[in-house]
Image (spheres, rainbow over the protein chains, first blue to last red):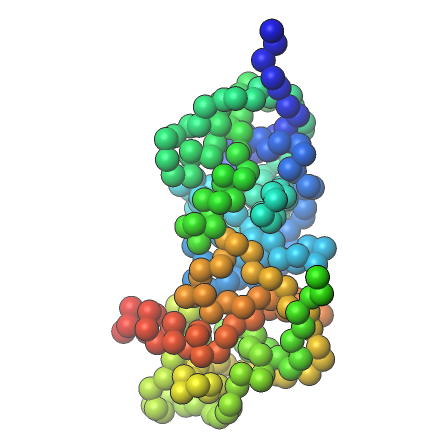
Length: 142
Length: 124
């Protein structure tokens, strides 16, 4: 029997590819000037208003400890979960790929526990962002 | 569910950053100069040194900002995203949008207390 699969929006952030389930990826946005929120952790770059909602912008590189990120990210993937929206910084959108479900977390705990994979896509290996878990993780770490 | 509105907001500048307060929470506004009575400075939130500005007072707590203006029209208060709910000790009440710009709206006493208790000690 074929393993279950699902459409994912695949995007690059730095050197790596990430995927978010297509039904949670609301849109790719060009980031406006962000409002900084004092006291927020370094991976939360600021917020912007989008269709009447305040959306926090998460620098994936900083969150994953992969570098300092960019001074001015231009684009982000807006992800909508039942508990709210997040914008994940992106350098490039690679397209939509059908990726397998049921992959294992990249780590047992911490933020990488909410990355699954790696999955193979036409562009290379993809870490699938488990959005709801990531959202809850970010809400806990503040 | 109807949106919460705030009528009367102080839009405060702190360096290039911005903070907002519900004007109804502010009991007194005065001038603060370097060498004046020690008080909490919003500049600490952005790791900037204190500077002359306006001192806002509420419930025996006060906070100095660089400058301010009053926005008198009612504004919808946008809720705080969960990822930011606990920053600055829960002093962040929401956001207001003025002329397309998003301003974080704080409880003045709670933010001043947070700065006094957590930040100025670290900077001294």
